[in-house]
Image 1 (tube, rainbow, N blue to C red):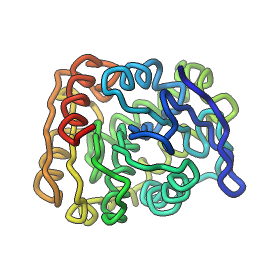
Image 2: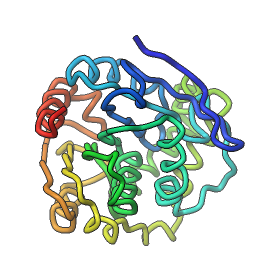
Image 3: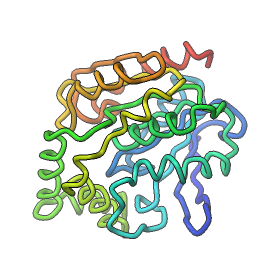
Length: 260
């Protein structure tokens, strides 16, 4: 059964949801959503993940997303590194995290990798599962975000996202798109953090992902300081939605190897 709560971190309220035992009581898969995601957009994946692995699952909407507090715009171009450095340590302490695998999608995967590289001595983190993360900016990603911006501005994307983000819809979209489309974001580079990653990593990448290529996988393999389990799937940018059975099987395999 899923339990929803609001968690207060300083002056920020974060929408949270956990399935199974809370993170203070059992090993937990911590879900970090994509650049347009939130708790609700994981749909039934947390329940299916908990049932498949036997671990608890915890998710939250970052500030400016879903039912969490709004954020100021524009976001700094270092918003992913800032989230990893400044927010995750406080969040993990607040929920009493004991042992976890960080499962991040897209921006969430980048944030998870950055955290593991920034805090390699955190004994609570047993591993990383990264779905379509970005370690550097690729031209095709910017082109895909340009297309999404057009759909948000002139199409129905804003209305569809508003069902999940409510009053945060413009904050969520522009906080993401305006940062990625800024010329300065061409300098985005998480590669310096990767050699400090000390826990096993599973990278799940769709071979038809409009937001990223296999170059992201190769960068992780080349620079990561820990073993990388490469999972390539015939899907696009959201493996957990587009290839859920394969993702769940890979997650079970990874967690089982950790002793979970």
